[in-house]
Image (spheres, rainbow, N blue to C red):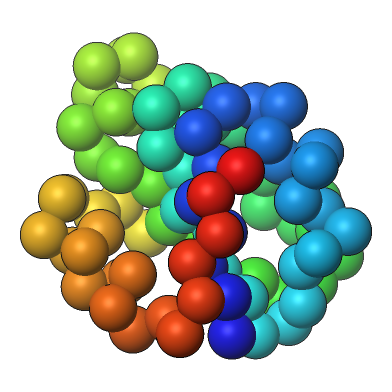
Length: 87
């Protein structure tokens, strides 16, 4: 069970081959631009999250199935996953 922390759109391409069904992805910084379209692109049942503040700063409306988090919830998500990988 890994948490993949993506900070740019290009980071998604790098992490795709490392994903498994028990993993989660959080979109931060410029990676939030993927939020309207990323669901279903993995072919797996992966939980998706995005930082609310990063979305608001960029004026992006995410897919409704993406869980929006603030910074304390982001920390909780990291604690809940035994391994966090930044891409």
